[in-house]
Length: 354
Image (cartoon, rainbow, N blue to C red; front, side, top):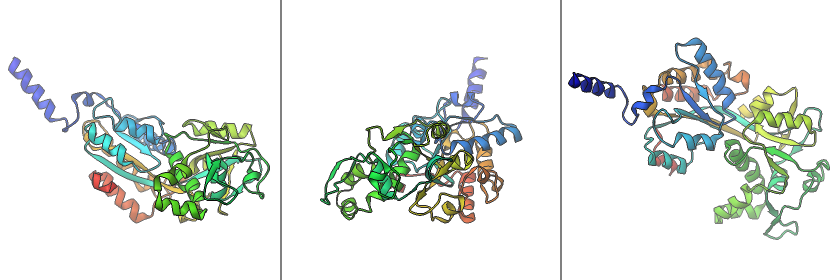
């Protein structure tokens, strides 16, 4: 009898993929974490998936891109997420943490594009800013107005101080925390883009990349920039209540709340579906999710969820995700990532960061 029990246990172990603990088989739903920007898209897919298949609706938590990748990379097993959403690409340090903790199969799926917007209340004045204006308004240190190649603590109090063509409204911007992929992308696309309009800072990027990044990416801490957590809906509510405030979030939230808020023109371009899709809008970025290959087969429904997300009815030009603000990839790119999702290959390697 005892021999039969051991044989049964051995057979069960063979059903669990290598690297996946027996505890992993105990969970009967997909567990997803990550980006607040990707969250509404993933939620729509998850709800449809739960209603149209035999699998349970996946559990999704909005933790921010950095927070999600931290949870995802912590290990393999039921206590760890199967998928993490991200509004930026995985970093080398995060991939190294995956390797360190035994996460050996990480598959990257690009899902589409999004724009980062600087928005205010619908009834407030329409803003037309440049990336240079954004950098000067929000950087902790800015180029010395005397023209020397040095920086000083940010002295600007109003938008008019930054640019005489802007209104004399106190600089007050609600935005995501450092754990957010939106914050990372905002720093890279908006602030760094503005910093490079100064010739000496653009040169510094090549001569001392680390020093340049500190100047270009560090946000001021004197109250002009207010970290509003990962809840973009909360930012929308605050903008409605205070018409002098601006907010930073993904285009999808602007699109879904167009009756309450409006986006600022950046470098003369309005944030719109068409302008982001065409690449005209300067603050556009790709969106991703990452799959833990070791959980596929042990956690039910992962392959089927990937098939739903990467179907034309979901992420296609006329798919239901575009109705929620996702900017579809070109068809050839969608086909490529649909194949990757189906085959769970190629898996990211350290060479992808070199």
